[in-house]
Image 1 (cartoon, protein in one colour):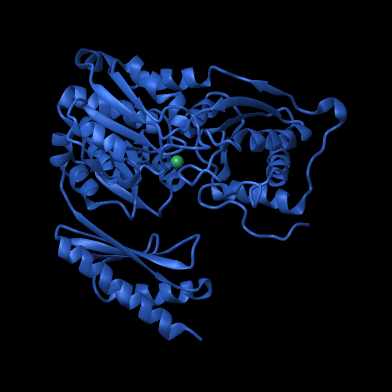
Image 2 (cartoon, helix red, strand yellow):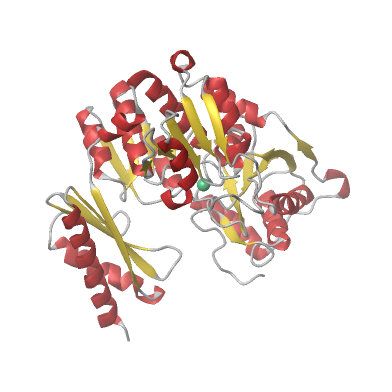
Amino acid sequence: MRKRVRLFGTNGVRGVVNNDMTIDLACRLGYAAGTYLRPGDKVALGRDTRGSGKMLLNAFASGLLATGVDAVDLGILPTPALQYNVKGGYNFGIMITASHNPPEYNGIKCIAPDGTELNRCEEEKIEEVYFRERFREVEWDHVGSILHEDSAIEKYIDGIIARVDTGIIQKKTPTVVLDCGNGAASVVMPYLLERLGCKVITLNANPDVISPARESEPSESNLEILIALMRTGKADIGIAYDGDADRAVVVDEKGRYHMGDHTLTLVAKYITARKKGIVVTPVSSTMAVEDVVIKNGSRVVYTPVGAPIVARKMIDLNAVFGGEENGGLIFPEHQYCRDGGMTSAFLIELISSEGRISTLLDNLPRYFNAKSKFECPEGLKHRVMQEMTSLAGTKGRIDTLDGVKLWVDDGWVLVRPSGTEPIFRVFAESKQRKTAHHLVEEWTKIGKKLVRNLMP
Ligand code: MG
């Protein structure tokens, strides 16, 4: 039996290629997943544009086939495109991606038969098989087969087009600049937007990750070229994606970069205006979402941080919309996962019917954010959390869904232990810039002091 550590992190299994992310790990994980599934089950496999993708995909597939499970290789495609196809007729899905991580990384993510990311409980079952190494090896005449399928992208594009009013878009023919970051967006988004009726200008849309033109995270500092292009005033909206295109962020027609929480708020506003209901978002999201949702006679339900948790809660509550502040938006009528393609189509339909993206975003309630962190050894995290919670409880209304969130007069502060690093993260939001900074400073100081006092 292998030394037991937790294999799956918040985003599947990730690591540096040929270091901790090896073909041995991929093959054994393929064995484990195949053993967890039934002989004859059909698994869809996909990958982002990373050079190591094919190597890991083939290793994983070999493990699967040995257990008598069949594999179907859908090729390079965004994670939401794979999820859409899994929901449409596979018993399971595997995505080889490390999302926004640097090119030397890669990862393996499991998709449940309904197209959502596999929940922790099911992941544990696969981990159990992996560590015990009790793999099912079928007789020679029952090994699985591997097929290739090249219509997955088209099915995904068709699915999105069915959810928007292409007539409105075609009347306006907006000009859109897409920054695909040399990632999986490259093989879908330009074609999707052309079919929607947009004039499309592409940046970094060749799937090349050995020497990508920008880092995969669509942060403001990584999008200088897109921002400069938008400042020329010749396009209506700029959209940029992360490596596997489940997240999308916007640069408006004036060349201003907008964080994902702006698009989250904007979409929440227009969806609840059309259909009242519940919007699900993690405790770390902006209060602006709650402001616009309540105004439309709807309500927000908060969850711990993590897209799969948001998606599952949305299913349980039959929510009308959900998403994260990093640009990962979930449209339940389309599918229960973050979807960069659906986000793009929705925003383009919105600017075609409601006007300029800059005006729509400027009309949203505006808050100021601040963030910080402090170090804390793993062994002390639990005690620090307890002390933090009882202290915050004496100061006002608190929420302990994920870390501790304390509401103050015109904002909130959230102190959360990191799941992957020996640190606590501190976030604050307020109508006043000063208050947000003050809250973060105050609670970082409190945290540091608690850690010092609890140190042996
Ligand atoms: Mg991603």
